[in-house]
Image (tube, rainbow, N blue to C red; front, side):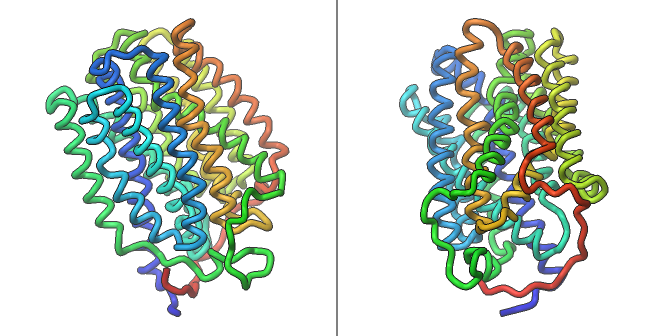
Length: 406
């Protein structure tokens, strides 16, 4: 048993941030790869949508399995190994020659994105608790920075180095980040894998929680993640096919969205401290709704990217607030609470966007973003009544904590 020094906590916070960056970077580089993959396989938007379903299915299955593993093995072991298996995903997608094998490689990508997501958020909640102040938004800020990096450089890498060259470069970079973070994670506190009801017995993943409030948070998280997933999976095709943008800038929509999202997430913890989670959530969702509607209504590449920038400003702190709330949900261990809303979140991020292809084939991708603007507006209104979101300022001083090794 040991006391965590400020230096140790700072190192652990950087490790979690690195994990979020690596996860976001993989998704950021996945976005500009999609138009090339579609052309290589000769598939339609509808077929792409059906393939994306497998990516979402892999994530959903792994999120449940990830929660089971985290409650038994601890978040550190799970985040280490899932991040390592995530690293070669783009290479696997690149070398697969048929629709079926590519879909299976996408299943692999989704599975390790999901399992890693649960574990890194769970470990992040532990570090946030040890620090005694809100830092979850900054973690998600590093995830967005990974998306910015992928969106800005992915198209250029594919253009100059080819699809395989791009995949290999990203793999090497992701591996370097994963190995750097490997020894720096904070061991889970003894209470992390204990049920909050008695504080003595290890938590057991006995099935779905019964409290309806966590599912209400889950549905809102789904609606918060789905527009983000639609931007990731469809914005490059939106710019290239509907607005005539060249491949080299097709990832700029994701980059614009992720850039403002990252900037706001790094300031989000301060905003939460000043205004409280509830007001920050309501205003953020409302701003995001305006940006998504603009992106769907606009007719030029520049105006669409401006719309996504506004959407990113608003969307930045919606999800971190929901994760923090789930990690502190009464009657649930952090791993289980996070697992529930992460399942819903990944359904929105990776599963719901699969159905965009159906609308795109009959109408347009722009209409989808316009519709999301209206839905996220409703999410903003829901913030007035969501359970267990704190309306108080988030504050606290760093504290020393004790823990056992994972």
